[in-house]
Image (cartoon, rainbow, N blue to C red; front, side, top):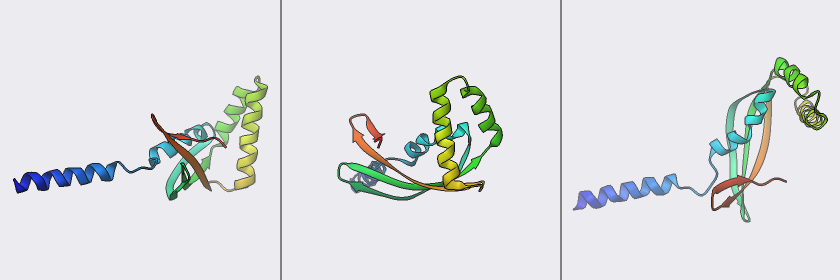
Length: 125
């Protein structure tokens, strides 16, 4: 009987440890997938996470390896669509302002999440 209780407590502890009330790193990395249009994200590292009212804020950093060939290809694909071209242009201006000519560029960011009935989702600001 003692073995059963001990085994139950271990399973319960593992279950509770796995159910932490914070967004996972995979959710953060999913938000960075769009950067694959211009380069590659490597060396992701979670720096901090904390509750801010009903939100959960995740601070993280990563290295962005910019691929000039991908940027040229993206420019060709968005030439005909004014709004898409404008969005790409703004994204690139922001990256150039942050990185300059460094490649890779170490980026530090934060995302704000809110928990709903379907799990965590990013809050747009």
